[in-house]
Image (cartoon, rainbow, N blue to C red; front, top):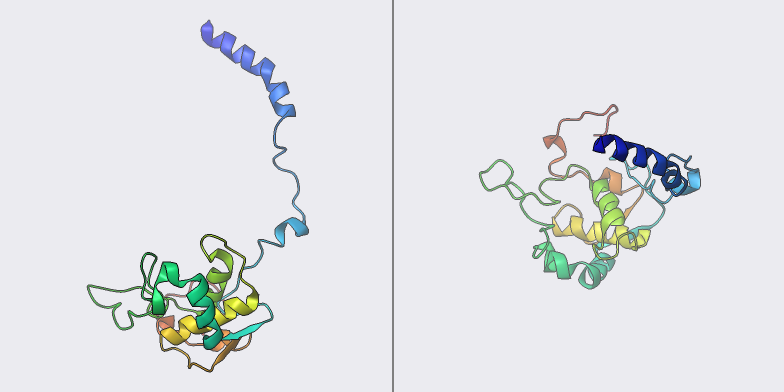
Length: 173
């Protein structure tokens, strides 16, 4: 009997609660989606205008990244960004951007989306390109004077690019 009373009281109270509901299920507009639709494909689709080099990236890194990732990307307290090349087939694999990540465009995508940790999505596109160039230089993948932009970044061949099984259509190599 008690359970029936609870159910009846709940049913009677529901219309009032529904009026105060957060209106879930309303249509979303393109303007609502735009700030979140910033993904970058491995082949570079979605990369924005802008450019940067390792020298500028180092300046930004020291200011905004080194406190978490250590100087020269060595890690501590957060993950290391550099090193580990040649370690993946060993018992002590070191998974860094330079040893593990298959596409350089992922560096741009992740950095723009999630960094700095305490203030994500605040870096300009030029800053993200510069940081990407610096991280690639730290890993010995590009030269110090190479400029990263929407055309050059997808052309960067990461050391572990062929270490993954491709599950999406298209030729990204």
